[in-house]
Image 1 (cartoon, rainbow, N blue to C red):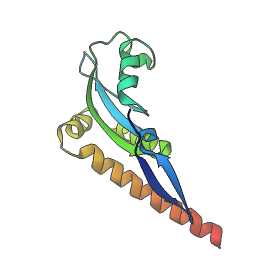
Image 2: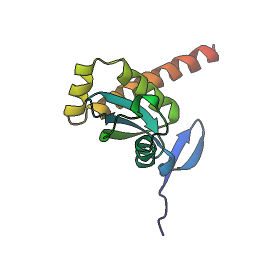
Image 3: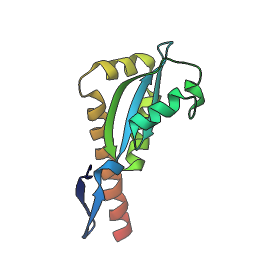
Length: 129
């Protein structure tokens, strides 16, 4: 029996325990024509199987074979969507460099996490005035 690992997350003054398996991930899939598709999912393997079965994103239907080239756990859904959006804005060449670099996606996630934290701090400061 597989027991999910729990992670303690500090939220404000309280502490919340959440299942690490519920963390969102960002992933890149290479289509048969070489194009890269970016998405987010709770379970990347399951999502890839859905894509291969023709369910989900229209951009991947009929474009088999599909190969998972990069996936990285992000955490919260909002942050995963921010990272996905940032990747989708990149040029094809930049996406290829991101795929080829070791840790490129992780650096992008860290950058977006810092930006989100800064926005959250600024919002909290404005509210406290």
